[in-house]
Length: 134
Length: 134
Length: 134
Image (tube, rainbow over all chains, first blue to last red; front, side):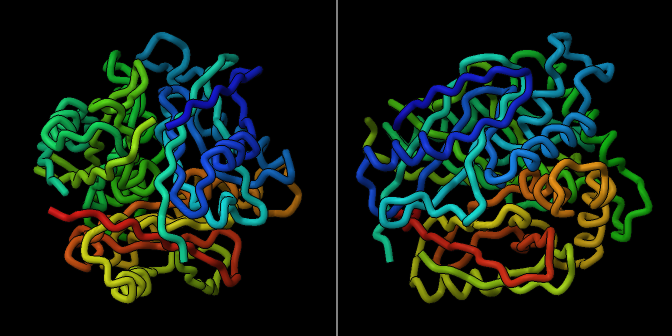
């Protein structure tokens, strides 16, 4: 198990962590396997989406903010209920397959850490379970 | 593979099952591993979020209910279309890592069963895949 | 690791792939294990929900379309921002347990490929990690 650190600069932000995750795969020398990313926070999440056009990230963030506004008569008084709700909708974990030493992502896929209540320094756990391959 | 039972008392409800899941880890004597929770229902789900302030749970439920109301000219005539939709958004499964015999949750994280069409008695499957650890 | 092909006929569509996934389990001769489905696309997803009444699928699609309309002043100019956002909400991956050679789905559960920007031919990766069983 490995721990990555991710530092956000905005209150809400999608941060591309694909390169850092591939580095962990490289260091593990795993040929084939299942990689699990896990976010141990309740106002952040992890998601896979397009990394090529930053406008996709902008549209995701803006739409989440429209559906789940920062202030909306919430009961929790810390001012981050929106981030908690988004965390449950996006999810705390993703699975990614590893094939021949590489993350088996689609052509347009990147791995994003979702910051919902930044700026902060956060942790992401990475576990790899080797498989037999083809 | 183990089966947990969860009993809900309301139509929609988040139920903290962290203690019961840790008990299954204890009984399995797993030192390090991946735990998979799986909900075999289509109007319930599982999610990880803050367990300390019950108002967070209230905000999650209320916001889901605002976005996806119980009645909204649905085609499915059983009166629980909202619960089916929420089940797909929250998800039927979560991954949690186990380290030195403990669920590797964040400081504020609890595991919640989401009931969308209760009250009922439900099942949650628990599978553990041991890993080599650090 | 196996690759399935899925062909959609509409722009947005839920396609039941349970039968094809079970066939892969059969061919693998896995008795007990964890099956991971992974969608390597950023405008599609995978989700588990009721397969018996097609109206449930209709309600899921219609509600997603109401919350996240196709056109809504998005920044990404390819006309499929809605599909990217839905992909992150539904998720690129699901876990399913295998017991005695069968997918351990609930009575009403089917596995659905979610097409958000079709019609197209898509890929789904399937990985199986055997476990020791009971």
